[in-house]
Image 1: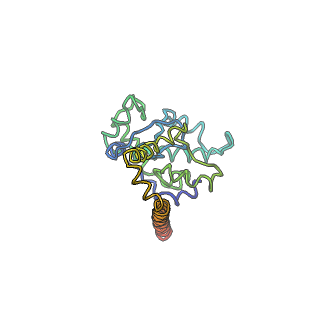
Image 2: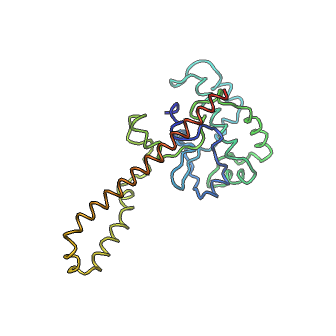
Image 3: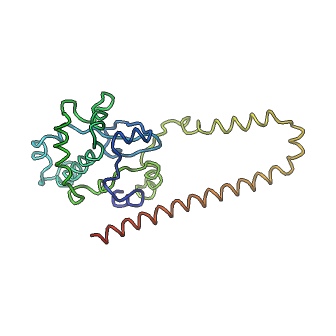
Length: 243
């Protein structure tokens, strides 16, 4: 899916809000150990994978990630690019000392506790020289919206979803309880005799109203969809012109 991510988000590795900004936007930081969910967000949640201690070891990089033989079906150069791209995301996630303190909170532990702020600043300074040629294609981009990933999953991954966040049917249908209860409350409060007089026209009016609203939603969705495509196409064209 990585080569087609330009359809879904801004073509920029810097499209990552620092941790303090995630709080300002009202997002809950959810720790995940799945690399594919790193920087994926939905509604008021964003998934962030902690920075593993072994990626801070030069010995580990030389032993396991230097170019050479294959490992678990992937070339070491590919693993190197994935690890490098993942590291680079922390350059954007932690830009201020306040971000660093959030990352080291006990609820998250995104950065090992024994690392101090000056050491991390020196570490980030080295990451500033990493360009897209050194990372995997996933990390050409920053944050990814899960609703869009799920929308395109069937077309690009041959799967019904990229990640299912509603584990139970009740979670899905709970959103409908409010509107349904509202309708029944209104009907209960109404005079049934009056309802009988308008029932002859109610079905026709309801169908017409539903058709108009549905058409409006379709037009709105198409407008948003086309607007995003036009924007991403312009961004890609600008990148090519600069290159």
